[in-house]
Amino acid sequence: MSASRTTGGKSIDIVRNLPRITLANLRPNPGARINEKRRGRGQHGGNRSGRGHKGERQRGNRPRLGFEGGQTPFYLLIPKYGYNEGHSRRQQYPPLTLRRLQYLIDLGRVDPSQPIDLTQLVNGRGVTIQPLKRDYGVHLVKGEILVKPVPFFMTGQPIPKRMLPGEDLLPYYVDANNRGYLADPEQIQVARLALAKKYGYTLPDVSAETVCKMLAERKDPRQIFFGLSPGWVVNLAEKKILKPTDKDVLKYYSS
Image 1 (cartoon, rainbow, N blue to C red):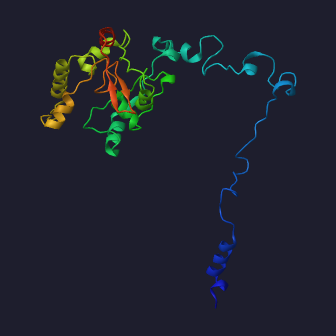
Image 2: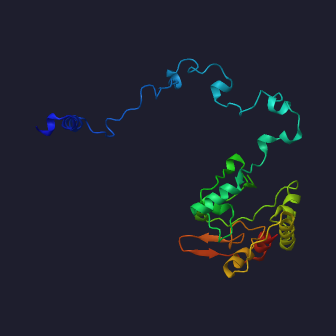
């Protein structure tokens, strides 16, 4: 008995004669794509091109989400708490959990032997910072920023100095208990020791040469990148760093 007369042989013959899947015969599922109504342009669009008379529907300037025409929106009216004021203009700090940070370290996206800053988190695809959405950093929880250095260096602009936080946030970043980047390093060490005694754990030994060197490295509050001071220009084509020598320029970036 030939193989073509058996059940397996017939199946092979059917599959052999079926058309192959290519880009030419792929089609979306029925009903998956719906053609939108095309609005008229110019003199061929009727009187109002199907968009009605004036207003936001004709001009396309729809209000933002949650806007109720000028009256106090529901989410601000009930309950009446002050922390909802100016919510649409606040600086946003997306949360970053310690579990997510450990996950990035386990995947090798974040190098724990180097200082973990915002640039390393973004390059490791750990967080997404969108300045147009008022993202100014991350909020590390227990449970205007340069995000892409290479395109910025290619513009040939000098590295700007890092701006200080607002007056309402300054006490938070100066406090050593919050590990603020503006706090005194000696006070931070005292706060770490006090927290270890409070919860009964031992601080890790950082006497190793490589670890001690990394932890001893400090970034100036005006710096954005490690090893690059404000006012420097990075030339990627020639792999050079141009440093200013004018006294007025140095005074401006060091103030």
